[in-house]
Length: 161
Length: 103
Image (cartoon, rainbow over all chains, first blue to last red; front, top):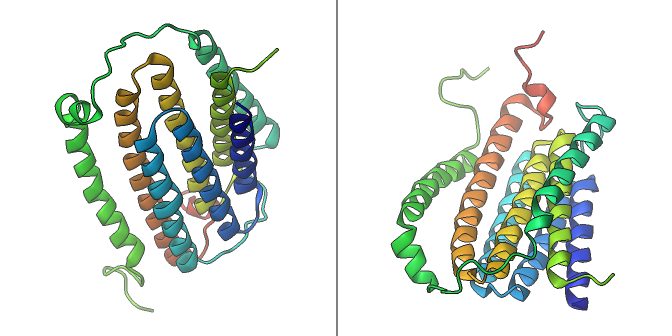
């Protein structure tokens, strides 16, 4: 209970710091902290497998990718103002958050729909095989993305000045 | 009023989604945009796990959350690749530089 309050506050604080910090590298590190704390909260909710995956992928792999990309692209702090005015941003934010609360709050205390808990492997391989096919397709596009991340220099069609 | 554990998680979900949404709205740096997107999707994953926890059907929620994490990581990879390429072509990470159609 108290642990969950502390972890929730930690997640929110590190998320705010990830958005507010000017330097990109520190922002990526705060994102990793938020991801690790999210993994702990997922573990407390009784989902250890996803907690492990979130910790290794969300806090590990994604952070490495961010640091790599920031190294290539350069850590330029963007001080300029946002494209949309601040009151509009806050209004849209309040609208979205209010809609989320309005949709989620009445469904909080619902009774269990099915108490028959199938094993995760059975769900993954029998009922959700289409998801696995899509994940394989997504992995290939990710490989293409890594190639785009690694390839430096001008594209082939462009002439060297 | 005492907070139950699920409402604490719910507050965290709404906060994460709100912070990520705000980051997507106001930031002009492309890498900051992807960080906002990551925070938003982290809220979604947490929401799926909470739903499974409340439902008594945690394994189905874990399966769906696995799909979300995979898709979200690939989105981050592709976005970072775009950011690197745009930086090398335009010399900046500002998304305002991409409005080349507008004169």
